Length: 163
Image (cartoon, rainbow, N blue to C red; front, side, top):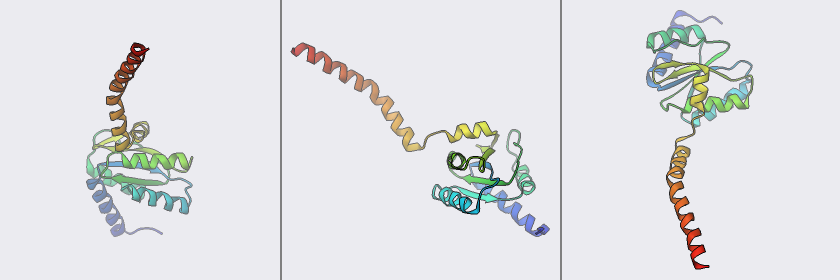
């Protein structure tokens, strides 16, 4: 069913509102994704604080042009969806998990990160960044490692001295 100009204007306004409030956007190709899988993906993304909006590529392109992001906009191909959040990494990470789960049906096409257009490879690299709690654990491990090595060395020295 064809949309009226008023409906198209309303969709563009909604997209512009989403883009103004989001710190990160991920352009997603959802070609061949079943409705049940789409619902599962939307619910999981929502739990992570990530929204997902499906709109025509032309309407999305109009809304993106109004935002004046730096760089070159990646091509929007196939059946298009937009994942967005105020968290910088969550949309890319969330979509990437479903890209692995639904191979060939969900694919990252690019996105916007810190007001700059990013290509597919850059968004996948962003998606590979571990969650904040994991990063904190890794940091503590890095700090603890030299201390732990020193303690083990002292332990070995004390074993040799007492024998």
